[in-house]
Length: 242
Image (tube, rainbow, N blue to C red; front, top):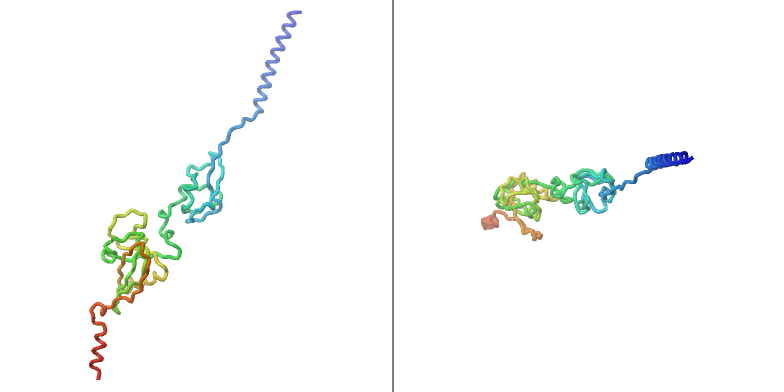
C-alpha cells in the first residue's frame, strides 16, 4: 500500500512539472515583447518650396521619425536651414537635406542680383578699370566719351560691381589681377545707356568711396572747355560781320 502511494505521488510530481512546463511555453508564445522605439526630430518642408527659394522659419516644421527613416543627410539644426537657398524644389513633408541647400554666394549669378536689376558686362583694360583695382562689391561711376560731338560725360553713377572677369563677390581672386571684363548691376534703363556707349563711344570706370552715395549732376566736358576756345568762333563771326 505504501509503495502505491509513493508511485502516485511521483506520478503527480511528474505531471505537475510537465503541466508547469506547458503553461510556461504557452505564456511565452503569446506574450508580446515590447521594444523601445527611438524617435528623432527632423525638419521637413511645411509646404512645397520652389527652387532658389530662401528658407524662412515658417517654411519648415518638426517631424518625428524612427532612425531607420532618418536620412543621413538630414539637417537637424534649424539654424543651418533658415536663410539658405533651396537648390531644387522640396516637396511638402520632405526632409531638408544638406545637399539641397546653398549659401547665397553658391548660387548662379542670376540669383545674386537684386530685384529689378540687370547684369551687364563691359570690356575693360588696365586704364579703363582703374588699374584693375576694382573688385566685386565696389561702387563705380561710368563715363562715356563721345566723338561727335566731342564730349565726355558721367552717364551712370553709383552702380555696383558684381564681377571682375569670372570672379564674383566671395570668390577667390588676386587683388589687382588683370581681367577683360567688369560686370555691373544696373537698372534696365542704365543697361540701355551702357549698351549704347559700348557701341558708339568709349567708357571709363571711376571708383567711388564705398560710403559715398551722393549723385552729382554735371554738364559734361567738351573740347572747348579744355582748350579755352569756347566762344571764339562766335566772336570772330561777329567782328567780321558787316
